[in-house]
Length: 299
Length: 86
Image (cartoon, rainbow over all chains, first blue to last red; front, side, top):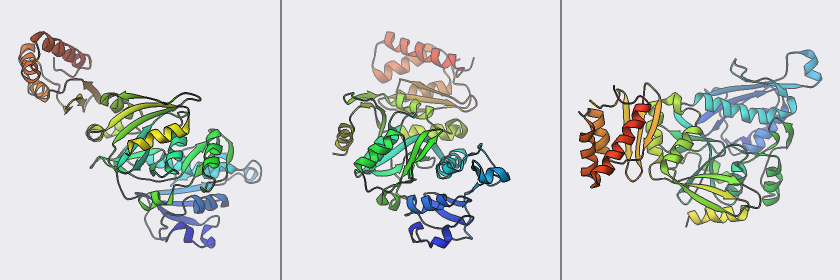
């Protein structure tokens, strides 16, 4: 059963909701009703798990224990099992907190993968990894591409299987910030998204639902063919600059969460992974030109 | 004797170069030489630089001067990161 088919009675505060997110299974229990509403909307195509199912991450989003904080300036606490890794944030940010917290759960624990901070998209066998620092326009570009027909493997966490060097899709929602939100809403008015949460520590944030086809193909792993480092710069004409293989290799290490933790396995995985890929720096100031450039890769 | 420090592994990518990793030091290095036999020789150990130079000349069919320069630069990089036994 998918989350969209779940009865509303299962989505009430305090209930535990279990579902699969790619290779991971999670349980969520929340004191905040909007977390269930947003999950039901944004993760609607993901599979629900039975109550007895073992899960990888047991997440709780809870109210403060303080009586005053339950009514005045309400706060949200994130828990993984008994751990509370973060300071609390305002309760209206509970759903983004779930997303950020789930990123943390995966990046801190899933060492069966070499994990890179990068988006991944695929079309006609062309699989592009987009590592980039915050502010480079990576997520906006990813959203533009996947809502124009590319398959989303990941917006944030690239999971490279250490055994095969293939990328395991996650197809979780795309997290957009500030001006990017209106850019994507205007370009794709029919794409489902969460409510905009204003004034978080990252600015205004909004999560856009991954295309259904990307979720349906969540088990289809891909071999990377390109590594592209995008940089949006307003009014700049599109330009590309080929990167040497070793530059791309060290760029991936710099963006990796666990290369050093994995040791030799990380080295072996990354040397296999980089083999046969083409790498470029991409600078652009016009989204349409960038989309056309990516389209040309698939021809 | 010139030899890689123990626990050093190499991966040569043709047309690009060779990635080197030392497990104990967690050190990753890239050398832009894609002559696998050169790194195999360093793994086994050689008596002196000229043996390494010969490997390069034989594989790349380049001049001895160019090969010596490549050997010197490579050994210098490896020694700086303590990847060669002293």
